[in-house]
Length: 450
Image 1 (cartoon, one colour):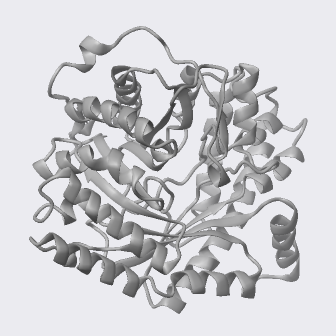
Image 2 (cartoon, helix red, strand yellow; image 1 turned 60 degrees about the vertical axis):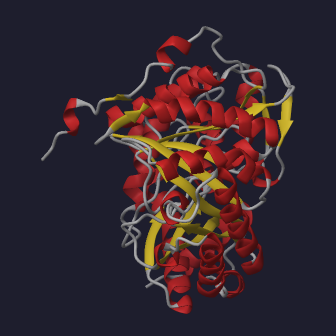
Image 3 (tube, helix red, strand yellow; image 1 turned 90 degrees about the horizontal axis):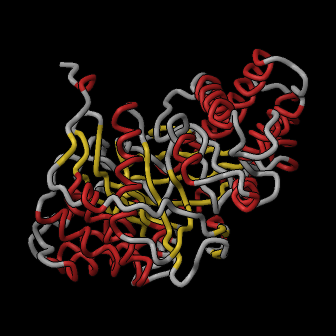
């Protein structure tokens, strides 16, 4: 039973420490929408989404009011569209028409974002995969709610370097067609099927017809708890984070079960991630500073982040029946005021962020880079991050935002939860000859487990 002390404690977390449920994400399979006629396919997709998700936003608001728990976003993820559109879409323009249908359906049901304009190409690209990828710049420029992701590597398959090379060009082209487009595009290694967070969410083919996944977030709560350990040892620090993560995840579990029951849709997972926002006091970087760092990026940052990520997982996994998605600490630059401060102070560089991704849940996230960055340099950064994920058997990702007309030291404003970011320096030495090699990097030796 939950006692009055726990109720009061949770209320304080919500009122004073920015605790929220970051998203209820409804995953919807579109496999039964497949047709070889593009118009029929688009009609099927629109009807399926608007039928299954018709009560999602209203239900989320009801739960918010009844339990007093803020639910920041209501979102949808769908089956990777490269699979759904393979028979009907013969050109990039055809896939763009599907993206516009997804956008229209998302607006009809009132969600914040829809993810799944995606392709899974860790071992090679089909013609449909390649065509969808080529359509991404126009699709993201012509829609407002659609998010895109491409999985180019995995521990089991290696890294498709042809896809990595192509994605360098696609990210560059996306930035030229839309200022916000790159913020809605993620390149993955080991992408999970049940991630509720955007922009990388999609409904995996291993999932059922529909499922409810919830992402919780409480950096402010963890920061307040860590502040009470000043002067204490690592054992006390770890225990404090673990216990706090348990309490935060309990809130997510409650919301997930309620949403599942009311919508009549199975509960999938709770994602334990600490997802920051630009709001003051809602920062993962501030937690690291509370542990004893002057800025995120100072020596010791990778160790501090590893400790944080591990204790969040250990505490959260005991609070939910099913844990999945990314589950850990996010380190997006533009969405975390502490990260922004560290980058502006010169404490945080792209290379230090890359080191930090070795021990956290995601990767190089929401990083503004100069607009004149070459596509081969973007591909090189992607390749490095994919290698970290492949070798370490973990999810890694890249969400780089080339800022058109901007140089190092300038700032870019994205608005809302996406925040703003200083344009960060990029290593200027060329990797073009390496990136232009064709084929794939083989899977590591420890991938052979059969």
